[in-house]
Image (cartoon, rainbow, N blue to C red; front, top):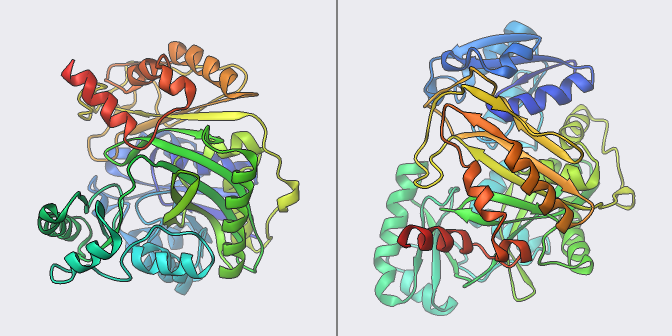
Length: 448
């Protein structure tokens, strides 16, 4: 069994992993940049190691420093959280070469799913429905032929991409050349790889994702879906489980398809299979081979601790549940609280002068923030996640309205007012939205 875990991350996810380790009786090591010396996970860990200055490439992305920290502290496993090195196959291989357990999938599976073209081909071969698109890389000389075969509008996407970078829509032939060129340039700048591919552009889809966990030996389960359609610039803002758009039959059918695929793949650890959903059909877009930011809402409706499962599987202990053991209960919503101006979304680093988290039945706050904490300007602006659970979606929404009024963060600007605004919107109350809804809503407010 794993005896000491080094947490190769920061912020709320580092604290989340630390708590799971402590519950399992596993010693913890926090690594941090000089900017994060006062972070909560650093304060609570059994040991801590400074791995470099604030820039991520010199600290949280510095593989050699992290491996050295493992050797210094005797950590026999690494949990990567999300972001940073969580989907870095080279990192997983280096840890393995040093006899250190990577709490995540194999390097092979990270590579397969990390390349969008390979991932799509693999998903199709595993029986997962995919969106119509190119068979391989799209280049300026073959783009028009492929687009005509698919049918306009089309979406150009970076093969190594994520977060909306290297992604452009071409509504017609006149738009295509510029869309391909711009997507390739953005992809090269963001990922060091200008390869792009093409898919059918869906008009008003929802973003539905299926949580899976496998033991690496051919056993896997699904834990239902999450609806992540409320997005801004392809970044998720508000997530729900279960989706207001699906019924039980649809949920179990697509969930089982994904679980069966993970069994065939002999997938190890937690993963998320992401789809666009429109007119009753699911279309695979990618698989994230890590823990998702929004994993707490799945935990809320299933009662299963996903980090515990990750550690169990990495230890070789297998899954703690079978598919027939999983019961879905109630409804959960997560709001991502960012240190940003709620109108302009400009980051708002600084010192938190007052911090009061809401409480009560069915309320969870995942955050490393506290009164007096200085939010550094070097990293992602996410400072906390508000998770609310209720027996029904109506009860969940009523509870969310109450706790948003209780949540106090002073000294910086946050996106809390955005959620207070959304909770009063009739479309949100009805669950009637798609992946374009939030951007259209924000644009209308700006124009008003």
